[in-house]
Image 1 (cartoon, rainbow, N blue to C red):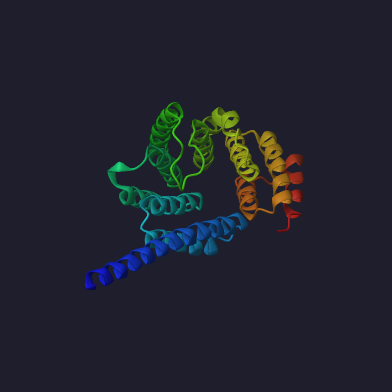
Image 2 (cartoon, rainbow, N blue to C red):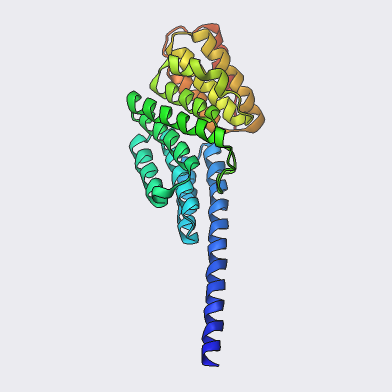
Length: 265
């Protein structure tokens, strides 16, 4: 009777632990959605707070894949925010959580996070190496055609690496990186992501001295702002505009300034 009673208590405890793990995982996913919304609105302080909550809840769930994913997405956020060193440190932490048996998709994805971190830090050579390794890994994934492990819900393809190279090229002011990949990168069906890529391509044209082409593209990205009210896209558009300093901007730039001034979120 005693052993039976102990068994029942242990069983209830195990069931309770499993429930708590599931709730923590669900909480992590909910916080992840909230941090994405905050980032999209351009509210970086709230985004960091939600990212922190997503990581803590993932750790509480005991799921290494979820924990690494949330740390990696925080690293991605910091890289886009210009904090290259922090992004690289977080990417290394995500790898440590997974250990040596991490899925191939996680490796390929974290290499793009590395590339973004190196680009934010101004290191072209290391960014290029990370992108090359990521593309090789993505091509292998495409051949194997294995379903992505949760919490990844989309396959990792060479197109995603091409998009990352465009973004890195824009940060590093390398027109060749941007313009060589623009067609492949724009195959994304996500409207907001496509608008951000268009602005990165615009930055590439601007770095190459093609002002008219740059602001024609940048202006087209503002259509997405009006439709989706994305503060992140607005901030990226403003960054493109700040990169041009001239006392007498051409008409395409003046028209862009008027449209950007008229955007209220």
